[in-house]
Length: 446
Image 1 (cartoon, rainbow, N blue to C red):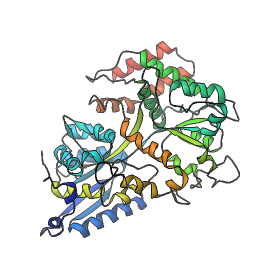
Image 2: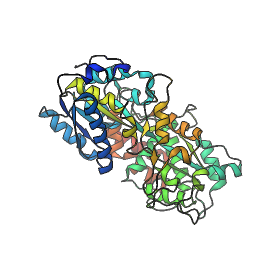
Image 3: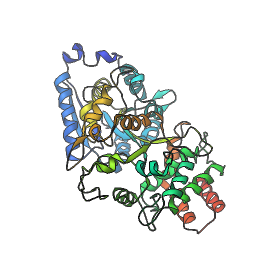
Image 4: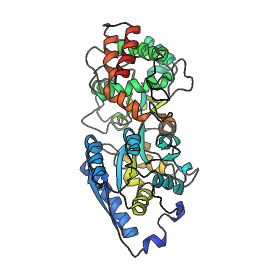
């Protein structure tokens, strides 16, 4: 394994770097390929060049192609120096030898592990080392009409029981649906909801040893709860589009959504207007909306949060020292530009420059969000709401992470077995017991 020299966080851009006699050129592959995001990443690269003399070539690679291209480049010994990737790629890339885990571990140590959210770092651990450096993430949210909950004397939807009680009290179609759950089986959105609910219930389809979990007690809880929220939803093949539209129209008491909804609730996007009243730029709905990041099933009192995290990895073919210094720069001096690519979907995984410092979180809250109109999140939501949303990343989880079985769990996610069987169950085609047995059988067949 290659290792970077430990400089210490305070020495990130010290005089020895600036006065280096050798200027190197490295390449970063990024999945942030939209033109405006590429421009921001180029700003970071230019600032790094001005500070160190080193050049960074920023190359866009589509998220759907990143695994295929990285595998081919690794076989040819032509990986980029820095690789931007998702949480699903962590262990497959590390196990294939593509990532320099020693370098990533050193970066976290140098910057201070206590400055990073623990959840994203723990996701990246394998055999005692950190295989890649988290840069940003988001926590999936239970989004609910806090005004309606308050009027009805309901508890915030922090448990299955809370959600079931709210559905019973607020479901009054077609004016108000108790929930809008995904039912379209070929959409990733449905599997995101299923995994989130499974985590809340304490159920994972994969055991610690990588085998399929054949204990169906927790699975049946997930299936029963999903049927409850699906029964409180409109008919049809539902996915993110309908859930967003119905919530923005005031016709849904609850949905589960990514935080990219935050700017839309604030009336900042014309393609997803607030239609609850006659003013598509209204912030009234944002004011009347609450968010829950951690919710719990009946046998998992601690609950769970579903998190999606992005990483920058030093590759096996990298100029290790320069690549490491650039990643440090991204999550330090360049962090505002990095998070500013899409603040509503890029929560800071690094809180500040030292333990206890929250300067990066404050910076993030001040960044403009929106498309057709722009405003900082801090102008739309109270500080406590923002703090609660960001805090979800510290406990964010995914199937298989705690047991080092993320790669196996990812295969189950990608196969969408649970989406397919749950749809049959909620449509009344099979019984609860048969649905649970079919899921286990099909997961074993994978």
